[in-house]
Structures are given as structure tokens and as C-alpha cells.
Length: 313
Figure 1 (cartoon, rainbow, N blue to C red):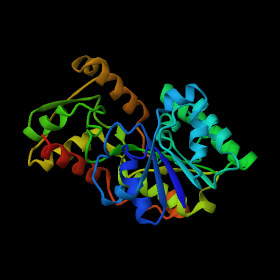
Figure 2 (figure 1 turned 90 degrees about the horizontal axis):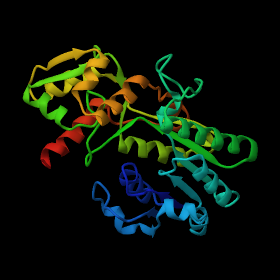
Figure 3 (figure 1 turned 90 degrees about the vertical axis):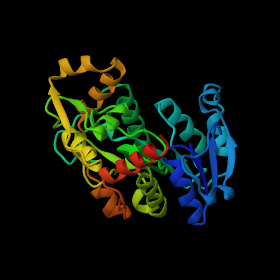
Figure 4 (figure 1 turned 45 degrees about the vertical axis):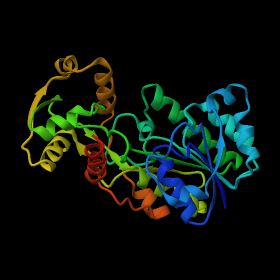
């Protein structure tokens, strides 16, 4: 099939685009073309490129028409972040595509209640990002079920892969946390370190999109989690990282209000966002319906990313 991937050279697209090419699809990568994929692959020589600035063209009402003009059978949208953006895509693609796949987030659930969280549990999002993504999901699935628009939503966890810094055991993205654990230096954790994070390797997210494309009948009108087999606690995560470098972790625990003063405000905000959610999601629905089988555990995914970081200083 002819597949357009919006954001096809980013975190997920780096892995998804080559997967689609190797499966025999004709792939068109839509991006600003401002960077190379995170990992090289021979399949990129067979990919067509459309250069587009989404935010500018959407403001002028042109982006949806630009995507429709590609004439793709399938559109995979990895960079949609507002309901208005989603509506422009639906209005432009209605009756013109066989399948539309949207990248959501497990943040649509808000804080965990019953774990592992399944796709059927009520949505209780908080924060701008979670609320916007939940609204997009609600809109797309309503369009699918009431008006026949062929939408599927894939909700990744914390995406990890070689080429960028993974979410760390403090629940933020400061790379020095990893280096301090590797050196046996003290690292402080908020509260008692029992909050959870749920990583997923970028290639496993790509797998989920590919499986949904290949199992269209089961995927239409549905949302699916794309996560590793299990979430991890901040404490367990810190212990694992230290252990990879032959260290016993030197950890200190502080109540949240004290801990937040020990890091920059931006890092504290990210940590709060993650521990307030404390996600732990099930991928059983994707396994049963699509055949999704993540290759990486949370720790394996992070370890690969850290190996890349160490190799590239």
C-alpha cells in the first residue's frame, strides 16, 4: 500500500518507516526535513519525502489538503497535538483513505487507579498535554464509530531509543542522573521512590503501528497501548542503572516539597508530571487483537539508550 507517515523521521518514524518499506509498502515521509533519522537504515533510499511545516500550513488551512494530495491508502500521524489539527486531517481525508492511525499517549488516562491500566478504564486526564490528547482520542473514535472514519489510536508509554536521553530514575530527563549512578555518587529521589514509570522502545511502538496497519479489521475504531511488558518503580530503576555499572546505588529520599528544591524548576515540573501519573499500563488488548509482542523490557530499552549515550559521550 501507499503509506504516508507524518513525522516519519522522528523518534517513532526512525523505526517505523524502514519497517514499512521492508514489508513492501510504498512510503512517503512527511517532515520539515530538518534532521536525519536517529538511526541509519538502507530502507531510507526507497522512501519518498514531502517537506512541510505543519504548524504554518495548518494555520492557513492547507496541511490537511497537502496530505490528501499525496493519495495515500494509509496515513500515520505521529505529530498531531491538538483537536483542531485532528479535525483538519479528518475533514481532508474523509472518504479518501483506507486507514488513519494516530499517535496518542498513555497520559490520556491521568493518574493510575486500577493497575495495570487497560484501554477501557475511564479517562481522567490532567495537564494540557493529557487533556488535548484525550480530546483527540475521543474525537477520532467517535468519528470512527458514528461516521465510519477509519481511525485507530496507538498510545505509547515513555518512548526510549538510541539517539536521545531516556526518562531517568528521578522522572525527568537530566542525563547527569545516569552518570551519577554509574559513578556511585548520591542521587536523591522524591518521596520513597515507589512511584512508577512505563517505558517502551521506539521500535516496539513502531511494531504496534505496523501490526495495526496489518490487522485493519481488528484495529478500526479502537485504541491500543504500546508499552513494555511492565512498568518500573523509580527506586527499582535507580538500583538497576547502578547495577549495570557494578555499583551499589547511593540513594537519599526526600519528601516532595523538599526534593523539588534540589533540582531546577523545569526538572521538578517534569518529575511531578510523571509521578503524579505513575503509569502502569496493560498491552494485553494489543497482544490479543493485533499480535503485538514487545521485544524490549523497560530496562532493556533504557540500557540500549544508555549504551548509545556512553558511546557518543
